[in-house]
Length: 151
Image 1 (cartoon, helix red, strand yellow):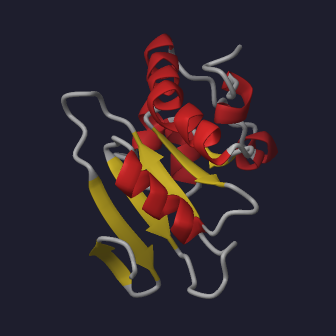
Image 2 (cartoon, rainbow, N blue to C red):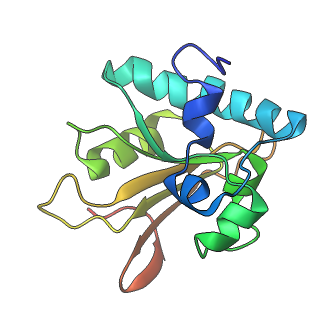
Image 3 (cartoon, rainbow, N blue to C red):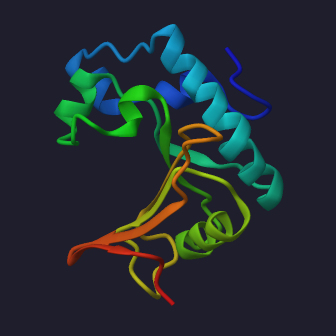
């Protein structure tokens, strides 16, 4: 099932952990609708801007999968509103900066990026809805979380 121009339901729900542990990672209709919004408003425009495939490391997570991954139960992944992404030939900091400066989103987090190592870490981005997006930008690394992106 296509969720937008470039992304499928299968790639937005794929999880090696779910496969290994026999966890059902099938979203509800409401969660699929949220994934469609995330793709339409965020992921497809990123793909079109960079003209390169966007790799989804983690999209939708059932509550059981989310728990198995050690994530918070309030994670937007469990609602189909968030994805952890990378573009293999683009520095994750560059990707996060472009999203921050050019897109509407709920939350953008540059996670575990190491300066000088462009492929390190990943970018978490979420969509909550046109009227409820916070435009919150964070960086998370071994030292904790802070507002904004590195300069």
